[in-house]
Image 1 (cartoon, one colour):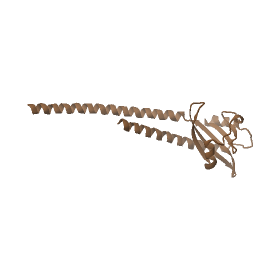
Image 2: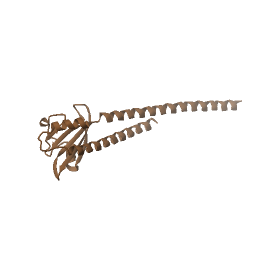
Image 3: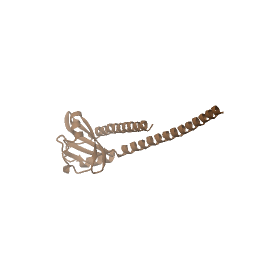
Image 4: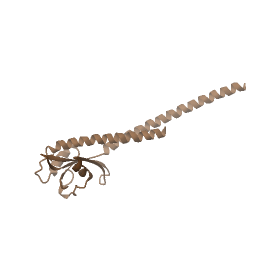
Length: 184
């Protein structure tokens, strides 16, 4: 029962986490589609635009040029940031139009979901828009689910133990009666 509970807990919590992340990825891609309609690519620095958008969508916003140069970011000054051409999500978006990766943030000490999408206007590749959100809330809800599963398994184990003790005692008493009857 413990092994079955453990396997169930691992399977359910990983499936729930993957489902949450998949839904969040789709949600972020939809937001990127909406954001891309409002961008003016004539500006050389889009930090202010990214900060405004971050306030509305509650996600870090980064705009990356086709060459990998960051031209706008909601959390840092774009001019001081490294080239993003080799980032996994940007490479995926370059070849597949959309990319996603989960990376651990050494600064904030938890996982972030990065979703990037290639933006094209009039058949011309303009840039990449990347959104990043922490996975703390998803991990917190998965941990709550994990605790609930463990609690249910413990309750089932206790009930099973109680029933087995009762059944064993009942069988012991019946056996004693049979033994007493056969002796008499």
